[in-house]
Amino acid sequence: MKNKIAIALSVAIISTSGLLSSSNGVAEVQDQDRTGAPGSAEACTLCHDPGSSLNAASSIIVMDSSGLEADSWVAGETYDVNFVVTGTGAAGYGFQATAVLTNGSNAGDFTNPGSSTQLESVGSRHIVEHNSPSTTGIFTATWTAPTEGSGDVGFYMSGIAANLLDGNNGDSHAATALALPENDMAVNDLESMNQPLISALGVTLKANVDGNLSIYDLSGRMNFTSSVYSQESVTVNASELGNGIQIIRFTPNAGSRSNYTAQTWKIIIPS
Image (cartoon, rainbow, N blue to C red):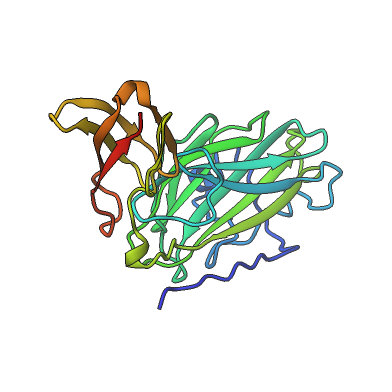
């Protein structure tokens, strides 16, 4: 049975330390996890008053390789994660976040931190956080999903909208969390590419996993080849292929889920 994760956030928790009181990041400076994940330290609501007029709000957006917002994850796939903090009239923004499995262990791996963002660890837990206050409130990192069968992943985040006046009040703290389930497709549903749609204009295909698409004629001449991303639709014009019998070959990239296999179709482009 796949593990399921329930997201719960504590509210109005008092602490003596804050995220932007450590402007280089609370994991780097204090060696503290204040993400709100299970087992983390108390949140940052003493130095960053939750009742401030800055009205902080936090959100986590996970994007797949096609640039679409993900509603599940696939083992070994990479995703772009946006950690976003907003506020009313804030001078700067900070955050701290993590991704964990139901047992509290790290879920996947973070790499490629964006502007004002760094990767840290507190104990064995991986942390993404600011390394300087951001004026945009948008922090990014790449996340690689864990191994197949790991179950639901919980992303946890604490965000700060700050006035940057170095005092103990006037800032605003907002926590959020996102539960992302594992894509639990049955083995017989794991076609790497959908059935081609054929017309006199050409052929349209949609991939279910990253891979390489090639189309040949019966002589073995390659008429088309391209890398294709998961959930990307590709249309190849008949003028590129010619009429008659064509052979389509789609090969999933190495590192894709083991249940995906290469597929071959023989099609006829009508005249």
